[in-house]
Structure formats: C-alpha cells, structure tokens
Length: 594
Image (tube, rainbow, N blue to C red):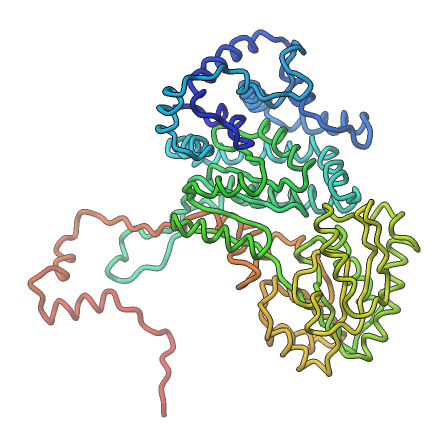
C-alpha cells in the first residue's frame, strides 16, 4: 500500500495524473535513499520551509531554541525524516534540481502511452483525491491513531508548530489582510495553544470509558460508552481566521484519534501556503494531509466518502457541503454565520458599551462571524450611542483609521466591492471613506437603516455597523425572532433582568451579555450555530466529542443462563412480570394527584 505521506504532494493541488503512480514511487524511493546521505538535513528541513523573518532573526532564533528544549528529539527526527521523503515541501540541496517556478517533482516523470493511461485510470477512478483518502483510511484501520501516546505526540507536534512558527503565522495573516500582530497573536496563536494545552491536560479523562447506570437485569454486567474515532475526517476552513478555524477543529480531530485531511481557504493565500508547506513537516504524513485549491478542487474532494466533515464558512456553501455529505450519509458539523443582533438598552453605560461593540465589530475589519451584524435599539438610544461609538473609533484607530497599524483590510477586491455597495444604505453617521487600491473601508456606522435595505438582509462581513431602531425591548425581541436564528446574540444593559429577558426570549447559537468575543477564551464553553447559522458545536471537550463516536457497549458473562431463561420462549405471564421487574425504569418522585 502506498503511504499517505507519498501521496500528499501529488494531490495537494488536485493535479496528480495517476497513470504515473508506479513510476513516481520508484523515483521517490530512489531519491529517499539518496537523501539519507545528506548531512545536517534535520535542521535544514524547517529552515527551508521558513517563509518570512518576523519580526527579527533574533526573535526567531530564541523561539526555536525554547521549543526545541521541550520537544522529544526522537519524535522530531522521525517527522523531519518523513518530511524529507515527501520531497516537494523543501528545496533540493543541489540547487539545480528545481527551476525558478519550483515545479512539482511529479511533473518530471515521462508520459505513458494512452493504453497504459486508460488502464491505470480505471483502477483509481477519475477523482484525483481518492488515492489519498484510501491511504489515510488504510492507515486508520491499522489502529495507529487510537493509542493515547500517539495522540499526545501529534498534539505536542502541533504545539511545536505554533511556537516555532509563531512569527511566520503572524506575518502570513498580516500579508493576507493587514491584520495587526496583536490580533494575530490572540486569535491565531494563543487561543489555539489554549485548546492544545487543554486537550493534553484532559486527554486521559476524555478517552476513558464512561460507565453508565444499569438495571437489575444487567447489574453484574459491564455497560460502558466507548469513545471511538470516526476514521478519516475532512476539515474545510475559511479565509478570515485561517489558523484559528483550521487548527482548533484539528486539535479535536487528533485528540479523538482520527486521520485528517485539511482544506484551508485559497483566498488567504499566504496562510494557505504556510499550512500546506510547513504544517505537514510537523505531523505524521501517514495520518495527516493538507489539500489546496479553489472551489473546483473542494468540490472534487467532497465527492469522496469521509467518515466526518467539519466545515466553517458561509451558509450558501454550507448547503453545498451538506448536500455532498448526504450522498454518503456522512455526519458533519457546519459552523456558518448569520446576522448577529446586538441589543442596546436605554439603561446602559453607553461609552463602555460602545468600546466593547466597536472592538467586537471591527476586529479583522469586521470579517468575523462573531461580529455584531447590526445594533437594535430605540431612536433615543441611537442618538446617545453614536457619539460614544465615534469616540471609541477615534481612540482605537485614530483620526485616520487607514493609517492605523491595528485596522485590517478586506481580503480581496470581490469582497471589497460587495461591502462598499452597502454604504448606500441608511445614513452614514461615522466613517464611510473607502480606498479601492488599498481595499480599505473605514470603520462605518449607518444610522436610520430600514428593514428592507440590503445591509439588513445579509451577513455584512465587513467594517459596517448599521443601527436599526425599534420602539422598545419587546419589539426588538420580536424582530430578532422573526429572522433566521443567528450564531450569536448580544445584549447590553445595566439591568440584568433585561439581559435575562433577551436571553430567555431569543434563540441563537451563543449569547453574550455586556461584552463580545471574550466568551471565545473559555475552552469550557461550547461554540456553534443553530439552524441557518450552523449545526453542531466545538471548543474544548466539545471538539473531542464532535469527532468521537460514542459507542454503547455491554459485555455479559456466559454464566447465569438460568436467570436469562425468563426472556426465552415459551413466554408466560410469570416470565413477563420477572423481566419487566428487572428492566423497568421507575420514577424517583412519582406525582400523586389529590
């Protein structure tokens, strides 16, 4: 069987011609023997994979030194040696084997005849990713990923990736969206590391068999819930938080003992490149792979049968993924988005509320599924809130936010054009400036927005905050409930009864009162949508449970057959009474009507 590590490079862009497979294997093993004689290769692998120096070479050196002291040298050697075998991720030591475009080594194999091509194509089918999925599934069937030491080793390797490549990660998200190092550190590194550390701390308890209550008939038998991995899982992530939304599900998938294929978004190209070229050198290529490409490659990938799919993205694409999963009856989690409401009560500390709303909304230039999509309040509250929002924006980003190093940019021209068109809605109360060449849209607040306007009919996913006015709390609740259930609902008030009123009377994936985003720092809280905003949940233990099949198991003794005889024919009334007595569930506190 071909190793998954040898297949990853060929399918990573969906361009593998399977008629070349046998020739490729011979070339790979020949080059493998040749590479073993190259001295000093271990340190070269990860240095060759380095994409940027950020912020300085001294910082990078200290980061690598600190992590190397915690990594198992034997495991480090193992995965670096494996990465050498895959070949295409690092430059050749001779320097003359790759051209300026770094063509893939599979392109160097001579073409086969048409008859040979047809014969090999029929054995592998027309899908370019089938061989990769089959290799990972074959590895999973060997039980390699099931042991706790193996899972811990992979999680430790992921932690090393975050520590050693921290600067490259921050530089990648800055190159993709001009995101500040502060936001990148918190969202893309720190929160992911929290998930890794939590998984390592709790893995033993998560994996342990769970004993359950038994009835009289099974009192002396073994009844447990076994935590089984699903098998080969697919994680598809979006562009806005490319590492956070890729690696946190990956933590759960690895902790649960699965083989994983990751498909990052092609829109955040620098982050995609780092994930595709560097992350596989840390993890076991027999059980992990990264596939890159656009919509066409993703569609072909989804044609394969996976044991679980985890998708994060838009609602429209989520429907496509769910339809593809339905063809194979594949269970899945959908982390989508929605029009998150933010109710601001008249009894409120307006400046504090404005500070928290502005920060929550304009992190990553509003390109976040957690951002409030609109503020809903009374007209009087709107008049009091707008000056506070203006003050908060000026304090955070200065008089000209375009010059602020802390304000991000739209991911591409298409999204810039879409969001800019929404500026025609309502009345621009704050901001409204744009620069197409810079993909810059200023932090903007729209006042007096109407329900039928486009900005209120879609998830904005940009730095525009409309304010929709209502008569009072009850009308606000009614308006929220008449729309699709959002991923998050926000409420701001000094009166906790108002907060609980919004919490009790609305439905959403999550709820946050008097703050935003901070609930994401708790690995103890589940995160997920409801209805059009998603399906399923993750973070912390919930990530492990998402990628785990809870297998009900009972093991009985071969003895006591006399006791078992009450369930066998011929049936009698006495046998029925005895069997019901031993299996019935009785209420603890029966209600008695007087």
